[in-house]
Image (cartoon, rainbow, N blue to C red; front, side, top):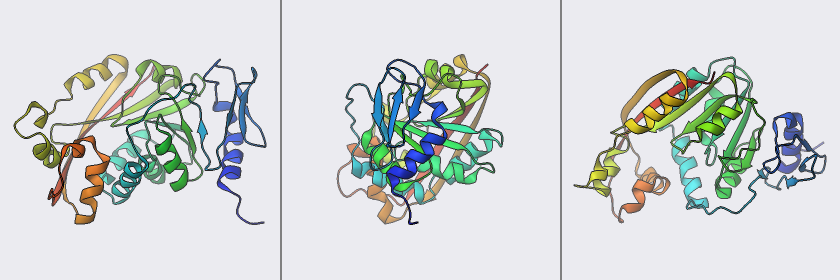
Amino acid sequence: MGKVSKRVASILHMKEHETLFSCPLCKESMHVTDDGHVICGNHHSFDIAKQGYVNFMIKPAASMYSKSLFESRQEVISSGLYNQLQQTIAKNIGDEAQVILDTGCGEGSHLERICDLLTQDVVAIGIDISKEGIQAAAKFYEQKIWCVGDLANNPYKKQSIDCILNILSPANYDEFSRLLKPNGKVIKVVPQSGYLKEIRKQAFANSEKESYSNNQTVERFKEHFTNVWQERITYTVPLSAQLVPKLLEMTPLGWHLQEGISLTEITIDLDVLVGEHD
């Protein structure tokens, strides 16, 4: 028997874990049919696409991110630029988490590389409002559940997730609390003052945006979760010429720059926030 298609592989994988799903329209449990429909008891149905993902959006949403941007992001992340971050996240996930949800996963590269660092097998789920991002995730990475969906209305059951990842992405703490199992974790990554400072300096020279503070974001996180732990990751690495346009395309900071920008190194400066849900 030859290799099955992406769609068939995704149907089989989602059927195996169908108890995780909750209808985004009515919150009923869902069933994955043999022919690739994710359907609830009230007959709300969502199709598994040929690329191997499900679109759970119940109303259209515009995204400013293009297919090209996500391909650039995949190349930059796969280069190893964020290795230290991914290692720190994997360490904080630990060896007991079984179901991991990456909210705002984009094209899925962080989730893929983090799962590769774990010692246990996990059910890995990625959700993003951008259809282009999820299509890229399904193209690049198999044996994960990829969904287009609204962060405020996740298609997953209450208390179904062990660990939520929220990497340089907006958060919805009420929804995170609904999804997490008792004592589940949220791992949120936010920029620190020196993040991509070489780009920031050229894009926003002599303006308020040249500097950045994450204090409000950190304080809000601490208000919602217990046993909060915070670690700063900062390093500067050489940047190859071929990655420069890719990095500029993947970050909104780079959209403000004109052609001909020269970057020979880049600074990664991030806070990793880890909190528990009671």
